[in-house]
Length: 329
Ligand SMILES: [Zn+2]
Image (cartoon, rainbow, N blue to C red; front, side, top):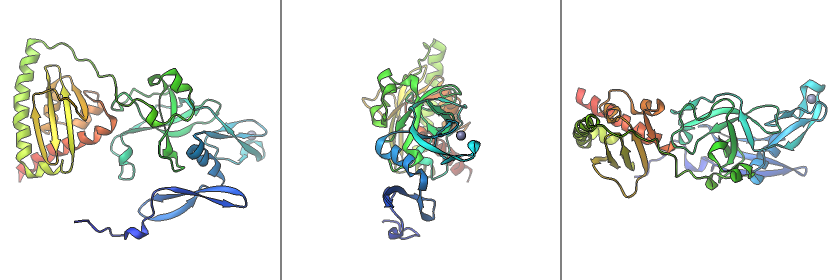
């Protein structure tokens, strides 16, 4: 049964944008949802947002007197030069991190679909000021240390753009070919997100193998327990993922399918993502609710091949929590 929303569908505008022409000038109008709805004009800054949206260009404003270039172009007149007018100019799409970006793993509902993401300030070539922008990596999960103050980054355009700051984000230039770094208006679909470099695992000693065997058997029991537990099943309702897990002692697969979870000792012919976990007990402890798996990912004890699959890790943590709670009752 379709659940009815508190606010009727007809009052909820579609996400998108349109241009209104007033006195021969184009102004961009976008629809934002903040649980209250309003039309908001980008006003004098329409040119900046329209350039991002339609031309995949990054604009700044240059003071006609002192020459300072501000990106984004948030001033039409320079306060340092007795309010001399500024002019729009195009700047480069490669820049340097002005600070080390914090990473948001647990976002509010409005930003959840973008997490995990870094948020930092970039000085693009030709600009004198830094622009706030979201940051990602093509190397798997975004963790501290990948993007730092001084890291060279490249501006990337979303395939679908509506004329908002989230139309663009940056990735480290070192992850791209020279050709892609040079290309202006590079889009997300032109980047290889599918072949991140997996962390290598040390060769297992006999002791490692024995530990692996023991932990794997216990983990199988735990996952069977989860599979039978109505409360735990709720955490993965409607979710379907095949995860190949690689550890020092060996590899196995965890399959999630709308409430069902199972562990098989196999190498999957295809998977949704890869998890590399040197010590199997790190994952086992997380599933047994002895510390969170999300923490182990953030602390680089567990690596996942796709950044957005942090969401799946979050669900595994919930499963562990729901299982323990249901047993306390
Ligand atoms: Zn000036």
